[in-house]
Image 1 (tube, helix red, strand yellow):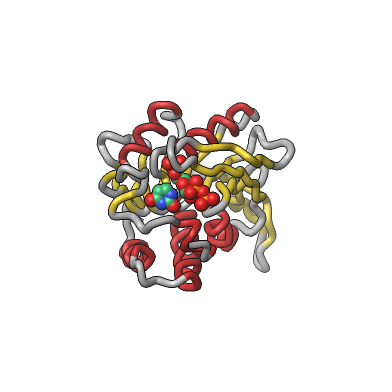
Image 2 (cartoon, helix red, strand yellow):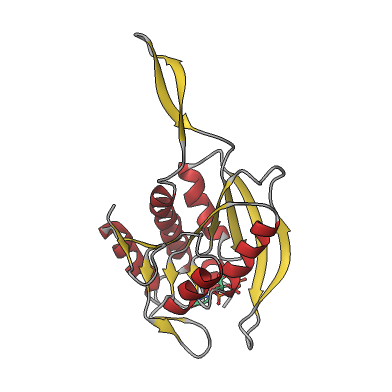
Length: 217
Ligand code: PRP
Ligand code: URA
């Protein structure tokens, strides 16, 4: 799939594919109901993980085909980990697992204070022996970047070195904040939207991803 690298954000990858763009437009529509919203998030996440995992390392393994022995590539190292940011990140896990069924699933609980917009941590659980695993943090929305930065901080303090951040929509303000603090972490998104509004919502955006996914509004 073609990927557009924005000059100002060299580690930002906008995954451009007609299917992704089309599905994102459906997701944005205010009339899209809960069931369809979740199905679209599943489909978009599956397409995104295909791109985000492009640099997973391979190692040759000796196998037997019905005709002969040969060395063929398989994924190297420990199973990757999908770290879902609660709540809305949970919605992306099934899409990731459809292509990486053996990946581990970890969770970090964060909510944004409605006034300060700063994230508050209430839960963190990752697999043991995580230091050498590749982590994919998933959350549909990268807005101010507070939740992304906090999750990356937390993983790095646990010794994790290989981290990618995968979202559906990103705001320029949030991407800038992530790259100021963690320039080594690639960010994958379907679209870099225009800007944040005064309440920290992405414009044009899709509204509150968690509320739309779980029907809590
Ligand atoms: C939303 C979203 C991200 C966060 C992004 O979650 O799912 O986690 O906001 O905003 P930020 O980049 O400014 O940190 P929210 O805090 O509303 O919690 P929820 O998923 O439980 O609704
Ligand atoms: N979180 C959301 O769910 N939507 C936004 O636009 C910003 C943060």
